[in-house]
Image (tube, rainbow, N blue to C red; front, side, top):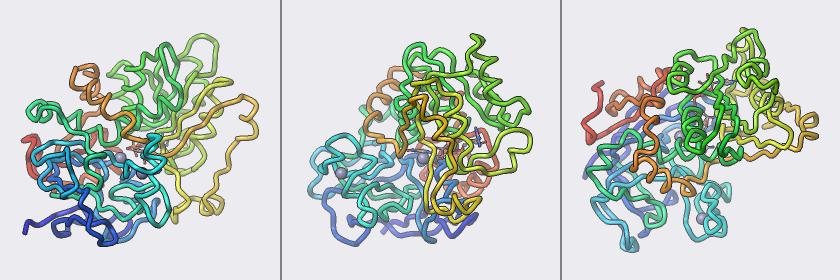
Length: 405
Ligand SMILES: NC(=O)c1ccc[n+]([C@@H]2O[C@H](COP(=O)([O-])OP(=O)(O)OC[C@H]3O[C@@H](n4cnc5c(N)ncnc54)[C@H](O)[C@@H]3O)[C@@H](O)[C@H]2O)c1
Ligand SMILES: [Zn+2]
Ligand SMILES: [Zn+2]
């Protein structure tokens, strides 16, 4: 029986590589599921969502196997799997979804009604969301394999473009979804809060969608440099000049508003200005987006918020509430959309865009570094400290791109 070494959450700030055992065709309650497949991981990425868990800001049980951004080769299928075959290389959407419930049928796989028995909706790998083990490991289980797996058409081509294709399990669809929520289209002006990997994918998606002025805000210089080098505009959120003033200057039209605004930061956001760097103000980004959005504009909020946040900065946040300026923004008639990205809504189209070289700007902007499984624990720390890289774990050295530990 093969081992299954996996990145395991042992408490805030503590990740370990443990042998979790080769997966069985069983759901989290131990029931046999013949609609499942077992995948050998080709790539599995570290995400800002993992950092919320690492930082103790998104509650998770000790012993949980991490990893929701998974791409793998199918090595075993249950007897009910008809179309997915051994040897297929597939992207695994991070949302676990059954394909038959009302929400899945309406393409809201982010809130599948059968993937999380405790909550009743919303399942994901490597979170406290339904008990599905993550894929930062050698092997993983994927239920409802025929419905869930996105098969890459050609294996050699997939391995050639793996640095970009590995983004299809989460952050590229998520950045794109943020743009869709914010109604980005040809000529839109866009403000994206956060220059992390999700913010950078949102900028690349806005580019693909034909946006005009794409502005990304952050305080992290190295991440902002990647954005500037790709030809987008930046604002420094730690500057003494308020962000709306910086946006007004960039737009150069005398307007202070953007057509579309996207939160790619979430609950761990810092405050603004030189002192803001050291302060967590959970409502800071949402309040800013309500200030800079044009009347009748749309705001997308892929940044994660939760009411299970033991490390929240104040009592209101600990109760799962935010002090927002919603009453003031109300009269602007803004739209808001939030929640997990329904990856399956977008992943095939974005795969085709990558395979046909329509997003050549992704690779330099994302700045991926492929690492071995034994380097993953250190990479969590480096990513947490603000590295401008997107870390991609290659547990079996299948891409031949991995740096050693
Ligand atoms: N909705 C979804 O389906 C989905 C999917 C993937 C990730 N996410 C979430 O998206 C968010 C971003 O993910 P990531 O991987 O890029 O994370 P990340 O932690 O790497 O990046 C966040 C960035 O935000 C910056 N930041 C902090 N405060 C800010 C502020 N006030 N204004 C602007 N920038 C600020 C930080 O300096 C950092 O560079 C996280 O909350 C993550 O959990 C959501
Ligand atoms: Zn992710
Ligand atoms: Zn479903």
